[in-house]
Length: 376
Image (cartoon, rainbow, N blue to C red; front, side):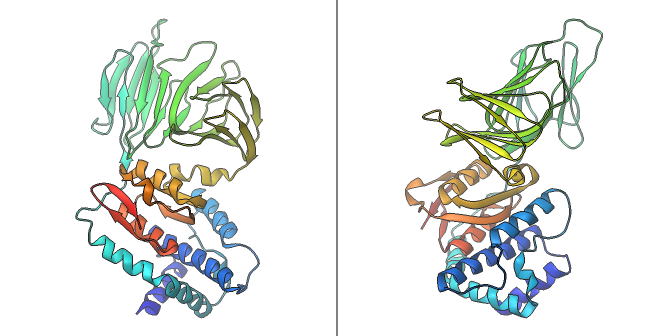
């Protein structure tokens, strides 16, 4: 029965009917097969690592192409591939059965997060964006603020006044929320869970400056006369027009800025300065202020914006931190072992399905106890 189920999975991937979850399970099978082969001293038929090919497929998927995440094992025949996966499945079979037992303890599954945020205007008025209907939601001097049919918040200049409102507004997402906003200058911002962005309703003539807590992806409208500055707890990122991601959660060990397009200048609280080129990342230690520049996979960094968790040798503690923000749950830190994960998981899956995929590749057992994840 197990072999038949796996063969059906391969057939669905082959004919393009596999769901995101099935594709993720397929990739996780192959990653586990690679690790099992290495542990057994077996050389698999191709020299490239599973992770590298998997990440190539992530880039294609995120770029909008619809081919599935087919990784290197697809070069084998279906029969040979099934054999490798069955071997992998046998090695990790106990974890699968353990999860089914654990799943019975979940009275009510926890759904994925969604578009939720609160907008606070400069006069103190608060608007629940998830409850607001599409159309105009507020007016400020010289500005119209409206919600599009797809849920995006847009600031639009109305003209007719020389006294535009420059007071600061704030958009904040809760745990389990995310949101998109178009600022008055046309810059676009995607806000991740448990994050906030403070910004003037109308930018001043000399510069465009915002304050970020948490994580956001920015696509900045070009304006050679007004640099765009993003301030966080430990740094200020300055650009003219570019695409970049900032991860600045206070409970992370580091703040990370990753550049996709253009160039950025980063200045820390200690006045240290770095220039980034596309594909580079600057990490700043939240305790010491030390910074390090390195190459980065930009597509992986913004996978959250495109609906995926991507784990690349990621410690389970970091995996659990991401899940806790997106599903608004707690994690028992005392139960988390120091192991790493590799894989791709759609962010629209309920929590039990995500834990199922993690259990399969990691051989662990997860419990959900009153919105607390425990690992055994």
